[in-house]
Length: 134
Image (tube, rainbow, N blue to C red; front, side, top):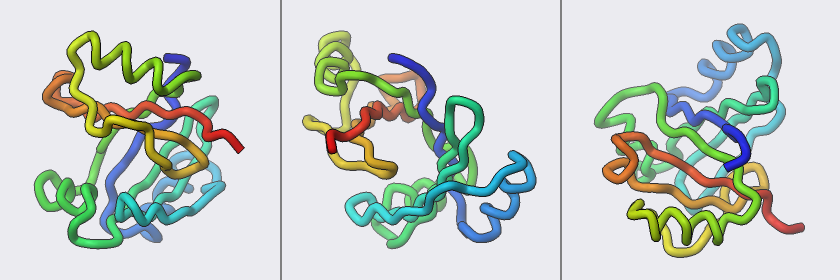
């Protein structure tokens, strides 16, 4: 794994949370994007070499909607940048980690992504991210 790519924060209101994080981080978000397959609207802030991603559910079946209902707003996941997501998925699967998808899937910010189940990572939802080929 190369670095922490981003920290995912589940929010109930993207506009209110955006204003809060603009003040907190001292800069404006650089991108907003809807990811229909995940049922989320995302908002990204740069912070050094990493990012903060705000995630708002766009439907009640969204994993973020379920997370908010169970735990409320707050820290949702950590994402690690990888250079070869398939190789990293195979390595982690072979090491006994439970992957939530068998193949990388398209994610926000032009990434291929894969999540690891929290029950295999000490309770933390982990995301692998690789820049998607153009």
